[in-house]
Amino acid sequence: MAFKDLLLLTREGAEAGNYHALWLANLCSARLTVASPAVSPALPPVVSAEMPGDILSRIREDVENAARRALDAFQESAKQTDVTVETLMLEAPSGDLGREVSRLARYFDATVLEQPNPGRPDTSDLIEPVLFGSGRPALIVPYIHVPPQLRTVLVAWDEGRPAARAIADALPLLQTADRVEVVTVSNSHSRGGSHASAETMARHLTRHGIKAEAKTLTSGDVDIANTLVSYAADESADLIVMGAYGHSRLREIVLGGTTRTILASMTVPVLMAH
Image (cartoon, rainbow, N blue to C red; front, side, top):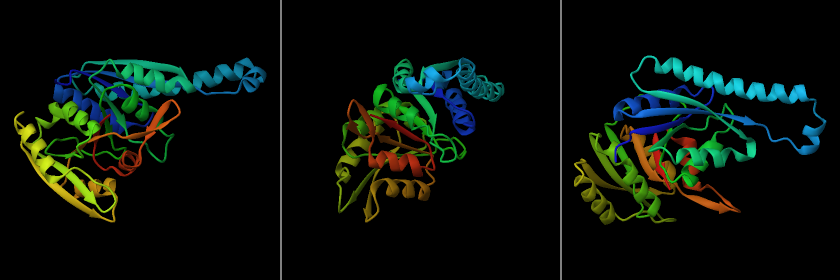
């Protein structure tokens, strides 16, 4: 299924995510909906009860103004394209943001987000609910701008369900790539997919008209995530496709170690699905 209806979750300063979302929408001839969260801070009842009403109003106004500035900045960028764009402010109390984000993302083919930037407020509160709550793929873009293109794509294959889901979701992008490598990683501590399974997946992709080949990496003492990131740099890859893994924590799922490391150290866009 082609991407025809895309969602971008943006915040102030997310220029790289904005640019990439416009590029992807143009590539796929897709409509793009842009949402910016306006999150009311979670204040203990005893604090909010004693806080003057004008201060609470000012806090809400500041939050809404920040979301509005993010949408205005995006609209300015979109003027240079022919992409059909709709914008909306996603208003939610702090504790309900994840639920609202995951609910919204279900109505789109894929969601574009920018990688968490250490110099700005954490955005994992947007990424985690999209990955684990929406049932849809997420395209996460490095906060350091990289030119969007699809010459070489790496598919991380470990024979797992999330990886299979990510590959199926990524087919529209894989079909436009010049070259696709189905990569497995093995080391002494953990087992990735076998080379034979990578070859089987590569054959499956060729039946979709994709130029795919299998590759096995031996990571030694380096973890799987950093092995993938390093190989992506060596190959000048333009995209990594991989499954998103997490751990249960009470009623929510939080990012697993490999997924979290990829998000922290990625230098190319990553399409993930769970």
